[in-house]
Length: 220
Image 1 (cartoon, one colour):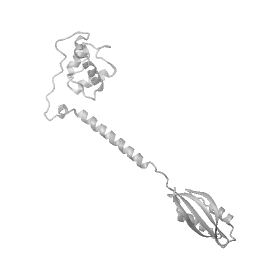
Image 2 (image 1 turned 45 degrees about the horizontal axis):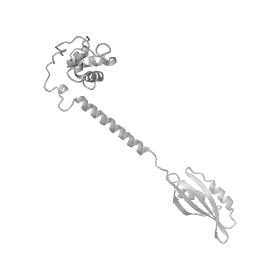
Image 3 (image 1 turned 30 degrees about the horizontal axis):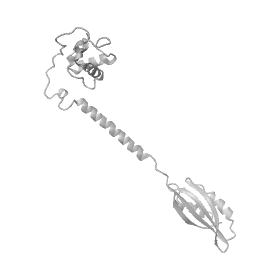
Image 4 (image 1 turned 90 degrees about the vertical axis):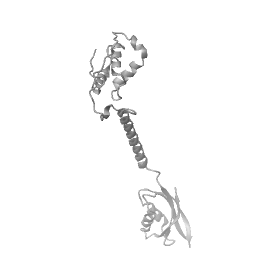
């Protein structure tokens, strides 16, 4: 039968764990008294870090009293583990008051991963852009007199191009004494287009434009 050394020590359990990495049983392809001997030699389930040995131990344990009927030579004295070396009372490796240190480490690791995922989710949510704030503005562009080329004025106004600016419908409305004003709609992204900047650009066409008023301002 394969020897694994002192099964009460991590080194022996590790040797068993590596051996069972690609095997279901200690010998052959079905449970035998060889499995019973190692099972009784361990005395308790291996630590979670020895996952192959722990899986095997749980499987053999599930047979209960039927383990006595496994094929193979039986012995009244199970395989005994080598005596444990004397250890200092301060050695925390063998102290298990309310659960193994490995379980605590696993709980701490799970908590750390959970916190990292929550932080990552919060960061992504904060970075996700919200809806773009837009405004619809009605501008009244007033000419100097009734002889001003209003079509030319509109063409100049619409020639203004800014990131976040979209021109809309327009209409000529009477002002006074036969003078017409150009009422023109535009939609702007608030973060990109300032109303003051836009009116200043229109006022640069000073040969045609006498003044610009904001007739209406609505959030969309």
